[in-house]
Image 1 (cartoon, helix red, strand yellow):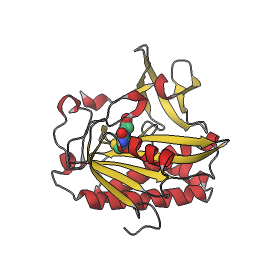
Image 2: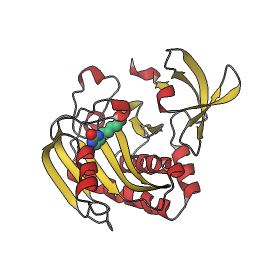
Image 3: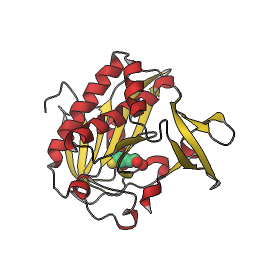
Image 4: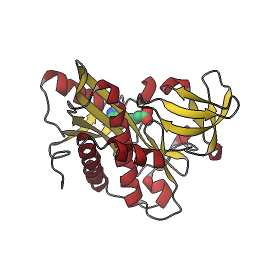
Amino acid sequence: METLFIGKNLLFLTEVESTNTYAMDMLRNVNAIEGTVVYTNNQTKGRGQRGALWSSENASNITASVVLKPQFLSIEKSFYLSKISALALYDVLAEILPGSQYDIKIKWPNDILVNKRKISGVLIENIFQQHNIQYSVIGIGFNVNQTEFGELKNVATSFKRITTKEINRQLVLEKLCMYLEKWYLILKANRFEEINNCYQQHLFGFNEMILFKKPDNSILKGVVLGVAESGKLRVYDALSEKEVQFDLKEVGFILEDQA
Ligand code: BTN
């Protein structure tokens, strides 16, 4: 691994409930050095955002959790961990999927879409200490060689589904560690503007009229303006002609091409 610390301590488990749960337990009970990566071939209780399950075909994808100790980061700035995780995944994809036929976007907060289908998701869990973050576990699910998605076939994709080629998962994991370390060091150096600019530049719906779905199933037409420091999504609502902000559970995206 050609990194300074992320992935230097690599822990492979044939099967585990969830690499995030495992990494969080390690931090609570025995500790783990910063940059430790726990990864597995099979999660029996993989967790997604908002209490959802994350299912992933055995030995086909990346299901990994990275232990970070961003004690320099205040709680108010915790969304930067979402941003840098999405940017690292974006960079990996931009490297392994070169060419203009692939439309790679970050779907707020930190999903990656390729041609409007989800290829990866991130679940971040933090342990706080007073006003700062003590430990953070960045859980990454990245669809690599899986080609069958069952009922998710219109919304999910993978590297192999897009290119018809298999790719070595270890190689993808190495690139992921490399780019995550790159962005983490940028964050540590307080280069917030650089992070914000890159994140915004790749954000799905940025400066574009798109459709959103609200929890009551009503549709909102609007333009993504960016993300507030709090992590809320800033949207220009075309109907009220005003800016509105949404929290995670308050809005979803309608990706038209997925029917
Ligand atoms: C989402 O998009 O809902 C987030 C998915 C995160 C899945 C990864 S797989 C590795 C890690 N362990 C888990 O239980 N979840 C994350």
